[in-house]
Image 1 (cartoon, rainbow, N blue to C red):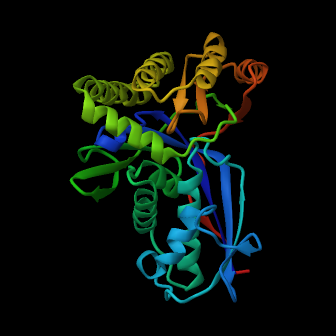
Image 2 (cartoon, rainbow, N blue to C red):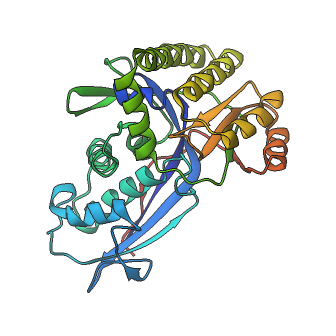
Image 3 (cartoon, one colour):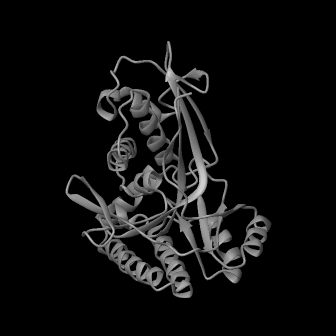
Length: 317
């Protein structure tokens, strides 16, 4: 038996645009998913038969064992999954599940994989299940800390991922200590349909493509603000990023309600992840005030730590 855990994430800037090859910034946070795997007489999840409808990511991995791991495809496995990350919250629950599962499966067969290999395999799972994705979530969940995705190689380069005609260069990002609060709307929104909505919008109108380009530009400004420890500028750019995402149609009244509640006590606030529901984040030096403001508006707040470890695999039980 092998146990593994992987962190959730927040997208500081650049979600949706990153799918089109634009830059993005993501940070691992101290909400984790834990997965324990063992051989079994049948495929089980938390003691119940594995079904594709309720577990599309695990089902995909199990149905493609020989592709994602060195485990023979006829193996039966038992998965025990426990997560701090709300599913459909925009906080990277599916990537954490894919990363932890692939890492644990490789260790189960005494054939451990390095960070790059695990991240790339998890990205393939995300892409194939969702129909469209970027390697952002899988990279930050594997590596931990902070990552910067760009269309070209730069300092602190880690690895690159390519799918179809797009290549993303993943870099380690040194992020200063920042006060961050997550507000979860309680509305589950899978990422895949939201990505498809934006892709459809961009096919129909040049205006949507221009918004994507602008998000990419301000994400580069955000990376510069981080490098100069300019938290006030970073906050302003986050709020601008949110407004652009709202124009793309991926915000919601519930998200806007929580963003509006947080802004009086924050440097900036925005939705994070796929949108449509899910979660928002606020950059603040008054986390307790933001926590209370979000709770008063009906959201579920989390004061989180950034810069946490990525994938962890325990010794064989």
